[in-house]
Amino acid sequence: MNFLFVFSYEETNISQIKVHTPPLGIGYMAAFLKRRGHGVRGVDLQVQKRSDVFDNLDGVDMVGISILTNYFEQAVDLVAELREKGFKGKIILGGPHVTALPEPSLRDSHADFVCVSEGEEVMVDFAEGIPGKEIQGVGYLQDGHYRSNPLRPFSTPLDDYPFPAIEIFKLERYGSYNMTLVPPSTRDGIIMTSRGCPFRCDFCYRDDVNKRMRLRSAENIVDEIRQLKERYGYRKFSFIDDCFNANIKQAKRICQHIIAANLDIIFTLPNGMRADLIDDELAKLMHQAGCIGANIGVESWDTTVAEKMDKRLKKEATIQAVKLFRKHNIICTAYFIMGQYWDNKESLKRNIEAVKELNADFFQFTNFVPVPGSPAYGYLHEKGLLDIKTFREFSLFGSKLLFKHPELSEEDIHASIRIANQKAAFRLRTLLVMLKRPIILWNVLRNFGQILSLTKIFEFGKAPDLVLPSPENKKG
Image 1 (cartoon, rainbow, N blue to C red):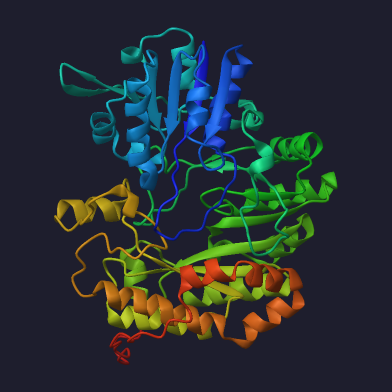
Image 2: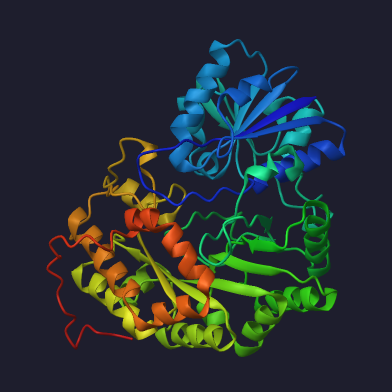
C-alpha cells in the first residue's frame, strides 16, 4: 500500500513560538511501514505548502493526518478538500488531539477512522489489509453510532522499533527547537528516549495508558544519535521526552553512554525536567555529555495551587536544581503557568516573586491552557466552565482566556504575565548570562520583535490589583 502522512498546521494571528522540527510520530509510523515494504510520503505543513498535499496524492491508498489541538480546524478543512478533489482512499486522523477527543474529532472531520493512542502498529494492520473495524486502537462510525475498539497493549520493546524515517520530510527546511542558545543555522536532531510519564500533573494529557513509562536502552539511543549525526550531519539534539529524568538512573545511564561513545554533540531538554530528581551527579554527567540547556517545570510558586495541580515540588529542591545547573554551566529556564483554575491574585503575586527567589537564568510565564485529555480540561468541562469557540484559540502565548475563571479576569492574568516577564528580563542574572554567552545576546537581538510580541515586556498597561500574601497564607 501507499500512504501519505500530513502534519496539520496553519499560520494564525495568535502569537506563538514556531518550533519547526520534523514530526517524530509520523517518522515512526513511516519507519514501521517502510520496513515492511510499503510506500510512504510525508507533507509537513509547518514547512510545506498546502498544495504539496495534493501534488503527492498519486497512487495513495490512505491519508493519515496528525493533529495538535490548535490545528484541528485546519485538518477538518483538509479532509473536506481531499474529498472535494476526488480522493477515494481512506482518511485516518491521529495525534494528541484525536486521542483526547476521538468521537468529536471523527464526527466533525468526516474522516473514515480515528487512531487512539500510538499509531505505528495500527497503520501496519491497515497496510496488511485488516479492516479498520477490526483493528485495535481504531474508532469509527457505524449507523451513526461511534464505535471504539480496545486499545492495543504495548507489547513491543521500544528498542525493537526502527528509528524514525525522517527522510520523508524536507529536512533542509527545519531549524532548531531552541532559538536562543544556538546559531540560527542550527538544525536539531530530535530524540525521544522514553514514552509516557509517571507523574499526574493536572494540566497535562494523561490516561491509564500514558502513565506507564517505557524506556529505551542507552545503547539504542546512542545508536540513533550516531546515525543522525553520520547520515544527516546533526550535532545539536533535543531530547523531547515528557520528562527526561523521571527515571533518574536511566537519565544518568544515557549521559554515561553518550560520554563513553565520544559523540561530541550538544543537546537541550526543552520539555521540562523534574526539579526534585536532579542531583549533583546527574547535572555533572549532563554537562559532560554535552547538555547546554535544561528546562524545569515549576508551574506555580504557591504551595496550595501546586498541590491542587498535582505538581508537588518543594521550593528548596527547585532552588537547589537551579544552583546545580549553574554550577555545571547548564542554562536553566524555569516554566510557570499563570491563571490556572486554582490561581488567585495572591498566587499570581507569588509566581512573580519567584523571579527573585528562584533566580533561574531565564523564565517562561505562559497562559494556562486547558489541554483536551488533561484532568483540568475534564474538570472545567464537567463544571460547564469552558469557553472555547474554536480550537484555533489554543496557544500558550495567546490572549484568550478559554474558561470562566472564578476569581481572575483575562486582564489580571495577562498583566501578571507581563509584569513577571519584565522582572525576569531586567535582572543582573539575565545580563550576566547573555554577556557570558554572546550567542544568546545575538539571538535576543535577532528575534527582538517576536520576543516583544510574546512577552510584551515593554507594555506598561494597568497593573492588576495583586494582594500581598498574608503571613498565615504564605506557605512553603
